[in-house]
Length: 319
Image (cartoon, rainbow, N blue to C red; front, side):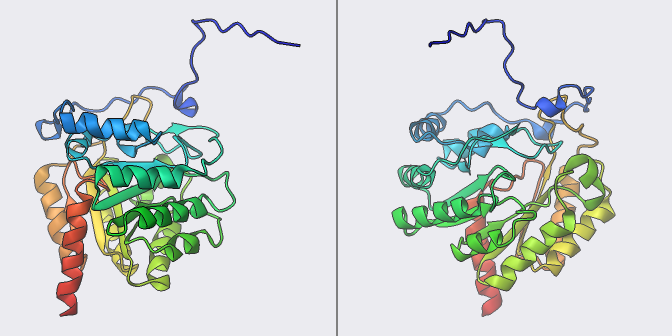
């Protein structure tokens, strides 16, 4: 028997963020002049987009609505987002789709490696959605992607931006065993804002995750970042710096939160470039090897150049 389903063209598509549909709109202040970016129109941007499409890949640049996509893709820099385009978490700041993800694509690690090769990346950043539906949170898939890139692009350095693997015993160890050059896990905000901004996560679990990486393999660089403009206080940002240094984190990023849609958390304030510069100065005095703090700083923005500086800073300390 054949069942014919008549799909009406007027049937509404499933919303990108179903859990936010019934929330009231959140109004943010107008963006200041220092937030403006150019629209992506260059040949380099188009070439990067084509390589991403040809390999059937997802990038966090697009999914998260990154303001730096034009600049990065023009240079053929892209951050690959693996394990699908649908996240099992529903953070109030994030533009990535929420829902039940599809099964993992076993061929994805090879596709990422191929795209890395075609783009000629000296440094590649791989991130992922949260996969709370998987027993290991996707750790084995992340590790497989690291190994595939190593096999295809032996000289490329690899940075991973991972989920928190909450309640996934042994997951972190799988990723660390694959030996990425940089292990990044973002705290996203100060602990007092977790309930409203990042309710599915636990601040001190994330701190411990980063600390554990150093305990397992001290040679791996560790990195974390937060957004500001979510209602935090200055003293809370400074406390986050201290917490990260207690976990021996090497690299700190601080950027301005930008509201993806009116259903997401409102921007509570726009931090000035001068305030970002001050945060950077203070962070260096606390012992970070590398700090990037500016309105448009994002985890993978200038990641290759920053890795070179990070390595040089460690080498200088060893002399």
